[in-house]
Image (cartoon, rainbow, N blue to C red; front, side, top):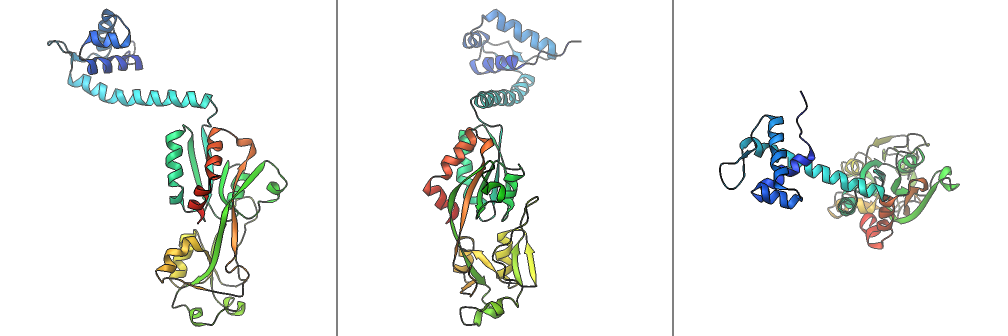
Length: 308
């Protein structure tokens, strides 16, 4: 027994008749002769063994079965149209997928306006991973990402030697030494001596590198270290008084303003310093989606929104 002739063409035909109200009007819209439309509908009804239109009145009305077919069929038609648009755009240089490694120092919610604009403009699918410290560079070197946002300092040796990577400066982030107001260090005079800092537990965020050597930042040489998965977790642990450490001022700003953390000057060189953040990308991964992101990330207002 032959399969029912339920094709996109048949669904478009049912949709046109339902919208126009008659076989003749649908035929005119689709550029067909009325007899061809009538034949096509009868064949579809025979194949499905259901009546799709009630022909007893002047206006062609869908039966309950026809209404159900059209309701589901319109989803298929919309999906087919979307697929056709994507295929046409891919043929014009848009990548099928762009992989972005986002450093934890750039809050994901700050990326949302860019994501909204990109999803409106491009057919390329995005895959975003969350990385810490050297994890952004590791993702590029290992081929897990095409673009890194917020990559710290200089890249690994492979990038410094120009092995298929390029960078642009995204901005600079200030780090401050922040502790809970009731922490034992809070009452000591500034600058806090390194000897005192090294006696206490330090909260650090674990590097997500899988292939490159893991990085550390701002370590005080203490024997007691609590490693947490995110910067948000680090700030929460320091608010709870579980330890001390340097935090990016933009991410800790709300906690500092609320009195949950207090900033103290230290003898450590990192206190008050700024660290550069970069955008980095693989030069063998060029396409219109990557070009779109690079153009956006060069804009000063975008850089400020992500970093400051």
